Length: 316
Image (cartoon, rainbow, N blue to C red; front, side, top):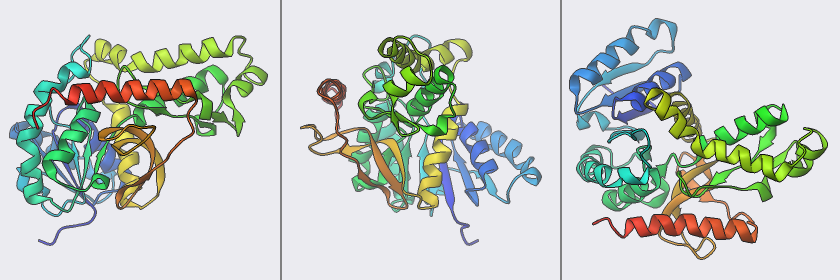
């Protein structure tokens, strides 16, 4: 049977993979969704459940398969791997998941050498770099979900404090998707105004710098709180993946802070890290060289160097 387009393959049918499949089905972006998991019974069960709701959604072919199911996929979304445990940092996950990726990436490439690979498994920046090196694909076609969700959390938290629609907030979190990430307050605006001025003049915040710092701390610790409460984050990351997928499939040129390979970005090279980037049918078409304050440059370099140190411990 001729493949339907667009086709999305999802590697890993756990909390994130299955929630993304559900969100993708509702979105109508994909005409074909394939779930690949070493637990075939789980993958088949998830597909049965999804298919039973198709009369309420868009026409979509949904099925489970082995890695051969990746054939002709436009995008392969990788969510497989050990999940983060309560109290465990994303970095602690690295050894287990690098081993997983060394096994699965060659299998994906065997069947889907022309696809864009979207890496979600944590630590996402490290695993995006690992995927890039193992796959041999050009850097534009290997993307990490990066700080797209962190940025969405930041906009939500600011909207709660400032009582303003999140769509009117332009602010990014960049760097590692993890403990060394940083907010770009120097570039942040609400309704076209610098964020500190808006917060002081219109949101009634009395000590703006302290309250913005408080907002960021809540963003940075959000995943740990959710994992402690319910064991995993799945809804918001799934929606983030729908947005990234949509920008690729519809060639939107959305500017998203995805994890991508950088070269000479404030002197940093050869690491995958989150920077606002044009995302379209080519994957990451280009990333933006933002003007960072001196302090932000220091934090960004620290974030990148933290990742580079960890990469040195990996045998690629």
